[in-house]
Length: 231
Image (tube, rainbow, N blue to C red):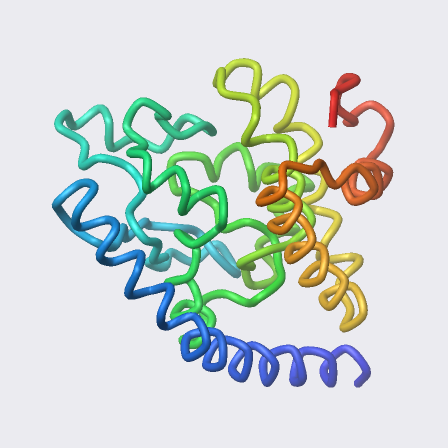
C-alpha cells in the first residue's frame, strides 16, 4: 500500500514538474533552438530509440548537440562515449548545462520517463546495461536524473577514451543503475533533484561536487568502485 502510494505521488509529481519545467524553461528552449540552427543547420531535435520500463522501446527526445552523421557507422550507439569530434561548440555548452536534456520533459509528461530513475538504455547497449542483476533497472521508468546519471555527469563525462570509460566508469555506473530501484523513495528522489541542481551550478562555476561524488561511490561494492580519481 505504501509503495503504491509512493508511485501515485511520483507520477503526480512528474506531471506537475514536467509541465512547470516546460513553461519555466520555454525561453531556454527558444535560445537552444536558435543556437542550434545558427551553429549547425539541420534538425533541432535528436530522437533516440531507448529501452525503458519492462525493456520496452520508446523514443527519447533531446536537443541535438552533435553534427549530423555523414556515415552510417557514425549513427551507432554501441560505444558508451559520444563522438566528441562531432559535438559543435554550442552543443557542448548545452551538454554542460544539461540544456540538451530539456525535451525529455515531454517524455516525462507522456509517461515514458520519470524525473528521477535509472538512465534510459540505448538499444545497442542494452545487452550490457541490463544484463543479469542489472536488469532490475528495467522494473522502473528511466529518469531524467538519478544516481547513475549524476555519477556520469560528475566523472564519466571527463573520461573521453571509450576503453577507459568502460574500465573506469561503467562498472560503478551499472551498480548505481541497480541501486536506485531498491533505494527509491520520495526523500531520495528529492535529494537526487537537489543534487542535480548543485552539480549543474558547480559545473558553471568550475567547482567539483566532491561530497556528492563520494556519497554516490560509497553506495556501490568495493570491487566496483572506480580507481582513485581527482574529483
